[in-house]
Amino acid sequence: MQDEVLLTAQECAGRIGLSVRALRLYEQYGLISPRRTSKQWRVYGSNEIARLNEISALKTLGFSLRDISKLLRGHSTDVVQMLALQKDALTDTRSRAERGLRVIESLLSKIRTGAAASIEDLLKLAKETNLADLSKDTAAWRRYEQMRPRAEVAMDAALYENYVGAYEFADGTLAVVSQGDGQLLYRIVGQSDLEIFPETDSEFFMKVLPVQIKFVRDPDGKAHSLMHHQNGSEDRAVRTDLEYVRSVEDEVQRRIREKKPRSEGDRVLRRMIEEHARGEPNLDEMSHPLAILVEEDKPFVKSTLEKAGALKALTFKGVSCDGLDVYDAEFEHMKMEWGFALTHRGKISHLYLRTTL
Image (cartoon, rainbow, N blue to C red; front, top):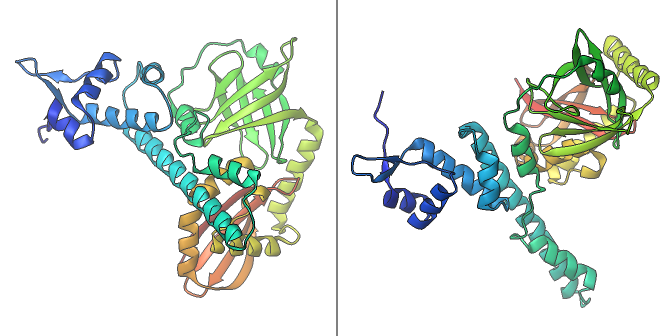
């Protein structure tokens, strides 16, 4: 096992791009605890440098040192989570910059034609080019908060009845909450039940996925809606008719058994492939959580489709166990598999692609 490399305060600050004063300030806030030599000189190793990266990413998202201190107190740095946070923060900055550049190009084109910039044009320009106007309400921050460790608390299982039922999201995605054997279970229609564990009397979390469910209750304690927290998204669903939701589930299961494609599924998928190839997926046709992921993956998907070349053939394969229509797509230079699902309101709720041999 190799000895760990330790840096002096001057070396650490210089190589990271901070000042020694900043290191001292972080220490005062309890954010880092550098080790000491026999002469009481501070030294910094991999743990301290990982924490400094985490602090930097949270500062990028607009948090004060006081906020960061409260957030990080009591748990060590998870390097994978820290890298994910930094990636999200940089992706968010890149997306904001790209949107700002598109606004500028559009406004320049308008002015070149002799038209004047309207007040709406200028307001949009100010909003999209203000990269320093960072908010805690970003997908990167929400994803980070959703991935933090959670602690289960004791709760009377009799209270679970307040949450049992069906819920519908604005895009038409349906969810079912049920109970059994002292467990509270949650599923998105078309997927399997997963147990959710109480963090408070109205807030629950999954242990297998970084997902949290917060129930909003009436004065009598019965939930009338819930908030689903996942992948940097926070989406509200309101209570709806359970029998109707079960009929939707039955239809999904029937399509799976019969391997029956959605009507016009071929046309819908061809349009989506064309939009992604142009780098212009229609986010308005997608559920909010999917739109966030598609926006982040847009450069990668566009690059992949550019390498693939023209679409030559699209062949329906069947319906996956979670209700996605699956197609083989033959392109000029490669073969791929695409799968997608729609909500009962016609919004695209799931979408994936992968290369095949």
